Length: 355
Image (cartoon, rainbow, N blue to C red; front, side):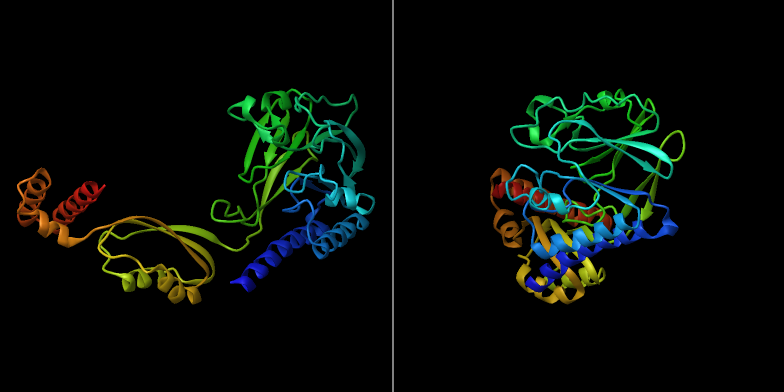
């Protein structure tokens, strides 16, 4: 298990390096790489990881492809040992460190003046509002980077370090393109000539964030920016549900799940329904582990004991009368479907009694 965890970390790193290789391939026409926060999972990552990233970013910049890096929340600039403070003088390309939204620099990309804006949240120095920025009066393309929360439902309960942003204010800023990080679900909004994009996390981080497997490319060569999604598949991470109501035992669970067998798949199985047995999850994990890269469980089922039916069927209490009635209906059921429905009703009734 430990070996796979280490291998999984390497997979995520290698996926990022593959993306940079794609950007560096002249056939793909990439002129700049924007990293809108959380390049690292920690503000003080391992030194060998830092070196790999620095080498890859430097190679891109040496090839004439600008990299723009914005610190996020996991790798926040505020910490004295933040990788971006320690490595600031070595960092390839443009590293945004100003604590308040501002015009950072202007660069020429493919003959077009590109005006870069952004901010790196810094505790004690960064204060809202963060979305009141306006473009400078200059021809060209205006591009902003934020690691923040777009249109939070309750603005007053969002922490400053989550950088709350209102889309209506960004649309009025004069920007052509606002690149966002922080939330890992893709989202695209466009209005008043301004494009706002959360690209979504490419490589999955877990069962709640399985990854989108798509690299987001924004074409700024036309009058309005256009979004292209390039397939960049990573390891599959999936959730499946297995209803135990009519499953006979652990062996049947094993057989059902082996139908999904894929040694590259990370799988979480949610067990639901009403079972007549208690699943042996440790045994099932051992039996199924060779069939998957990793398997995990979520338990959301009830255990039904048929002996309870026999104990209640002759009792003159409400529970007993209900069970008697349902058993009579079960005997008179016209087909298999009706039997299963009544059987489920008995199981649910017993579960309710035990609560």
